[in-house]
Image 1: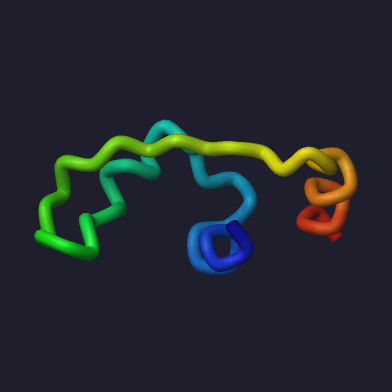
Image 2: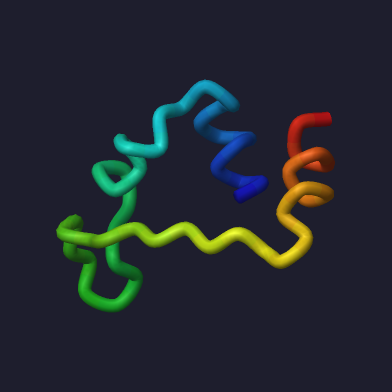
Length: 50
C-alpha cells in the first residue's frame, strides 16, 4: 500500500487499480483486486496519511 501511495498518489482512484496491475506468474493484465484491512486499520490508515 505504501508503494501504491508513493507511485500513484493519495488521490488515485482504487477502481482504476486493476488496470495498472499484472499477474507476476503469467504476465496477464486480467487480474482481480481484493483489499483487506488489518485488524488495527484505524492506526494503519493514520500512519499512511502522515
